[in-house]
Length: 179
Image 1: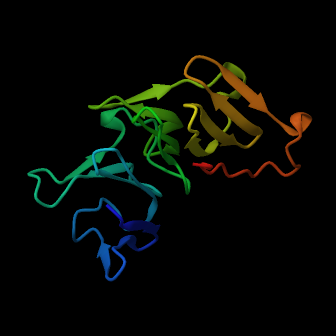
Image 2 (image 1 turned 60 degrees about the vertical axis):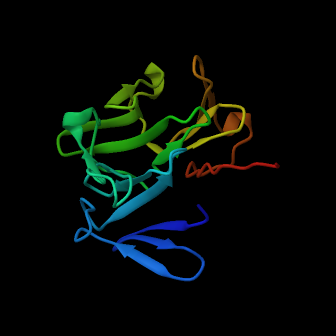
């Protein structure tokens, strides 16, 4: 729709090219400390928080414009890092969460009604996922504190310094398209 959305520590901002609109807990956010905001194919906004799970914001005209998700809805934690939401190329929503609110943390995928845990390979089950992105070929990319994982929907591949990654281990995966 041409808007640009920003996650901030004071809510989310929408810029339409002329005006800035701010959304806070007074408008329906679960928490003002937001970490990520993405838009799905239906124009629905998904907001992740530093400690309050995830919110779905459809439109002010919709009856239930604001829908908050927490661990009762299948989330594995309540704490999100910056860049912890991803719209995959198939239209699904993915998230990475750390523990918090009694959760263990990990990766979840939204099935249209609830969040479902997605298990990482056993040897990486205890690593923290920082960021997720989807590439145009349908692969999902996860930056972890021991490199990068690629998931093609069936198999996981791990990349590390042995594969040419730089030392340091704080990688941020971002989408890129040459279209």
